[in-house]
Length: 127
Image (cartoon, rainbow, N blue to C red):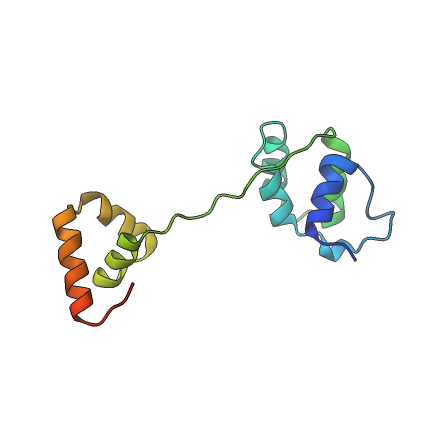
């Protein structure tokens, strides 16, 4: 049984056709494969092309990558959202989502953030 990372490895380094080897195409997740390939200069245009045509069957996308990209070790860490305690305070105090709270943090001073922190602590909010 293979997982989505076996499909990515097949595209990038091994070049073994997993469909012919008996791999289940339902384990190929186009979003994950497209995203993992979008971090590299030599494969970002391929990834963008597949994002433009999401209706293409997964097997066709796999073959497009497998035979279109040269063998290369493409590994990168996925971007993750940064989380800060100040962001959580602002979100809680003003009842904002992440985007709006980050905008608010840009204009709030240290004194204002301390005020928010003290107010929330007095109300029983724990970080």
